[in-house]
Image (cartoon, rainbow, N blue to C red; front, side, top):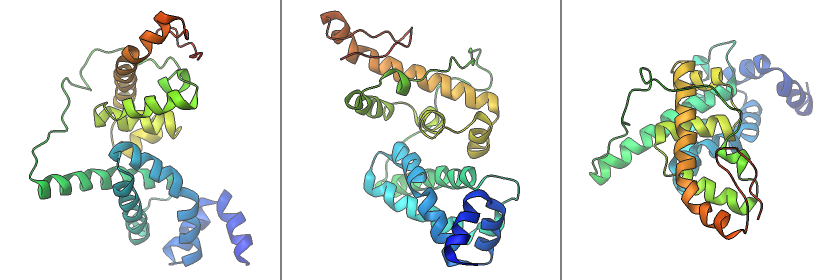
Length: 219
């Protein structure tokens, strides 16, 4: 079978792609990197906020995927499997950085995610939908970097990468309920950081925007 025929088949049949990867196919691995590099890098850069570090970790993710392809479970999604490796490698990178910089930092967040009495209904809108212009999207991404990582990761996977709750639960190895809670709290934290930034625009009449209603920002 020609390389082109392989590519067309792999695009619609992960089972065959996985078989080729397990057999050590270089062309299959090249296809995997080409197809998934951008989304994997997007998740990692959103978590690390350092392009150089994100590039290094992304490379490590695909090396780990190539070496560990035999551990991939049939019936799972290659995309969610790669994202799971990516999240783990980001955490490993942070631990390495903290050890070598002798910095003390905690990734724990206040409150209990499982036991907290919060409304986890998804209204369907996210700050990324509400802030439509490219310029304002840049503010949103910067503000996202200030959100606690445990919530930021869930928001990135849902609102930027478009994963389902079930896929995110598989990536993060938590329950669907925990995923919904993290997304809700991450979105709320993001809106809280953005509200002071855009309140002056609303007050001076340069644009109208309501975080509560989810209406689009008009500049």
